[in-house]
Image 1 (cartoon, one colour):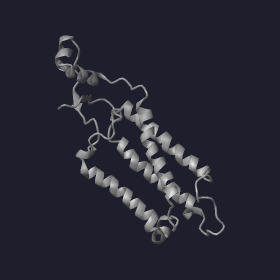
Image 2: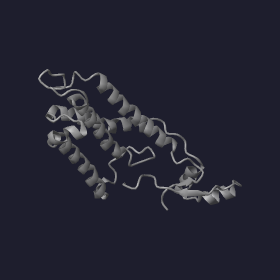
Image 3: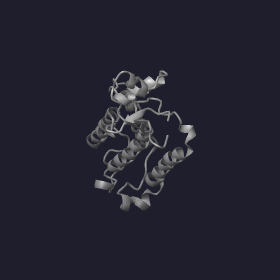
Image 4: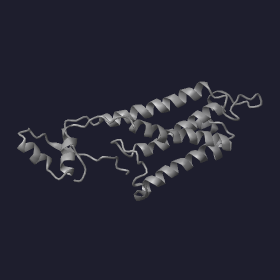
Length: 201
């Protein structure tokens, strides 16, 4: 009951959600396309004549797969809030299940790429020799970059909310949005109370 109401006729995807999705899509697609064509600067990723593994199981494609997974893992923290909040760490300690899932995904990815790679190389098309420490740091840097990109997105001017958000702000000032609208002769539009963040917060 303490959450702002949402007009039942409004789109499920708000303008702020659309900004978040487009911003993250631009960053993630940009990273993948950039690394697809320009990867010679990454340590130990240059083509090696002594390495017989090429194509889909090469070191290059394995790094693309690893970075893509890390992009999604870190972007989960951005997706916890839908109204342009920048304090994405808020409430993390109150949801141990979410932390277990996030940490477990990271551990599973490390085990799959680093430890179990010789066994899973044919099934997952990954290089069997794993990654060096410098390569892992590069992968983590691109993953953490989603948090920086999120701050840039929410720093943009926010789209103006609809009537229900205005009613919520009126209620926060101590007035009832329904009564304020009734006194002004405004037709009241029924609103539904929807969560301001996904259920994992």
